[in-house]
Image (tube, rainbow, N blue to C red):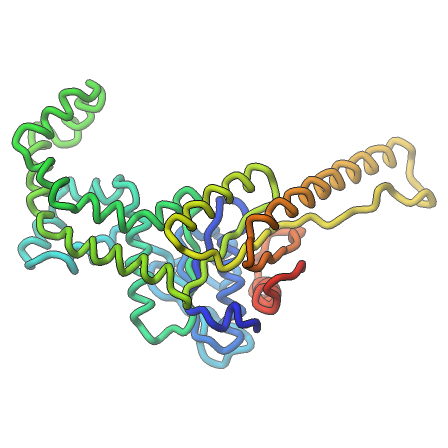
Length: 357
């Protein structure tokens, strides 16, 4: 295992959707556990086949042990995030009293706010992450973050929630006429929807939940600073999983720019699903009809064009990596559905830091 993986305790696996990010996170967790580290993988949206690969019928919000052949006792655990549960725990932590806590948790508008407030899901993810970091049980923590736009929300969520809880924002909402004025200038459709959901009690419920949240901004503000400190720590590694194409390159540029603005280092880039090179055409001695040969040769030409495009964008990604490692993983011919394949991918990840696989 290279120093790159030994020195880190927390691994944040980020990237756009559809590039195999969750599989990479599971593969890394599997290999770290096989290396002897007690490891937990926290995922937010696992595919059913990934749950099956880890030996589960389905993912649970509770910690689930994964049985590894190389390990006599459980070393790998997995869990799925429950946004509502962890946001409730945040409220319980920051509330000044049990009365304040109960009033907020029992307010129906609060429930809708948790589901719809931008960043609440990501904030809850960071809260659970903090729990694991403060628990010495696990030596390695792997977090599969939401797709890239939401991954940016993951970084911004603590600040967003801190800003929302700020006294000035609460005071604005608590003004006797401003919420009403705000919605009077909104669309009739929005107004009718609010009335349908809450009837004439809407603004009363809004005022109550804002009153109940007063005084909690300090807790959210301190939590924001704590999260930023962890993300910048030398024991944290932020790894970006992506795919060599123009669209992913533009997304990655934006993502890395935001990381730089927040002074969060990029530990490494994992370029996934690299196509292998194919022969230019079928061997002449292969006995095929001309029509069949032409179709297969056309397909080979198309695949090699894809490979050529990938190689171009791989070179472009090289400039984004800076001094960090760029790890390339070849495309698997089929969906990954077993622990052995996850282990093989994980072995490649932890054994190489700046090489092509």
